[in-house]
Length: 281
Image (cartoon, rainbow, N blue to C red; front, side):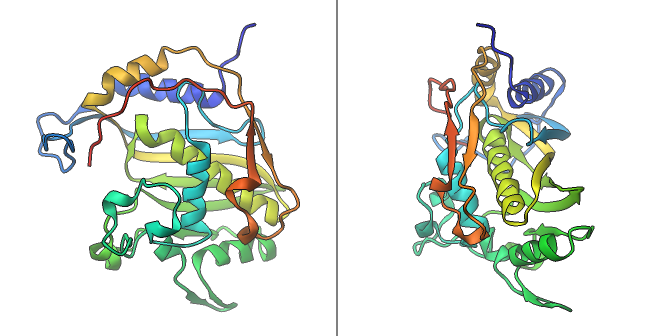
């Protein structure tokens, strides 16, 4: 049986090839990240401003060339956008532990910013509830957007936001979104974020009576760490596997009623990396 490569796999392969073949190496520059095992500088090869478009009405954009932990990705996006939390004790994975203090807080970052209420002429809303209000009451608005890169609070964030703003736009009956990201570790986190924000668009669309449209992902600094390059080359040489189908509990009408169990990927099979990735911090 011949398997057609999913669009998510195709985009990922193109991105990795482009970075490796045409990217800029910062090996001669002073860089902030370092390798956790020996404290040596963690250099990268990068491309400036990669823009990827995913039509969510055609497929759910999860990779098969390498496995993405679907449940953990969904759990994190709910932690940020639904729980609006900045405490790792509200999260089921340990991916944020390195940035948490002794109480589990990551400071005034991510979910904290989404939960702050702001005054509008229609009343007080936090950023998530404002999106929900506009999608239901004014879907033609060109002002449906969020931003968690708040300069006045950066000094109290344990990690500056990477994926920092989303612009929502309704075209006809379809909900589209643009995710802006200042920096991305392509091998480790690219599909993780794509999966998360694809789920987020599905959530907002369902509770607003809309269909899903496009997710556009804009990455300012798309990079591969030097120690990840051999692994990245191996990943893009793998054969694609069948694209899974996303099933969502259609009985849910409130954004705050979704749980990780509200989403199921049917027949998701993907290649494992086969090794542990070195950690750059």
